Length: 49
Image 1 (cartoon, rainbow, N blue to C red):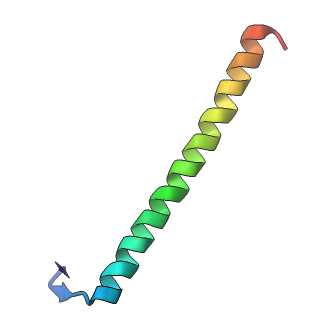
Image 2 (tube, rainbow, N blue to C red):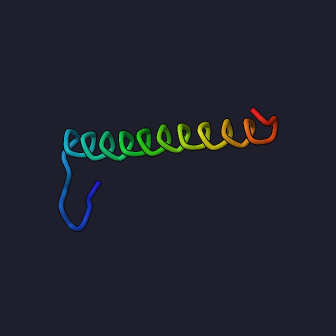
């Protein structure tokens, strides 16, 4: 696996993949929290609470 002409060792590749996955998980979790907050606010507004 080479990236920008630099050969990555197994460890380097694993670190890169881990960083990308970690970022994806953080983004996904943050998105889920925002959606939950917005939907609960909308439900409260609709039910008049």
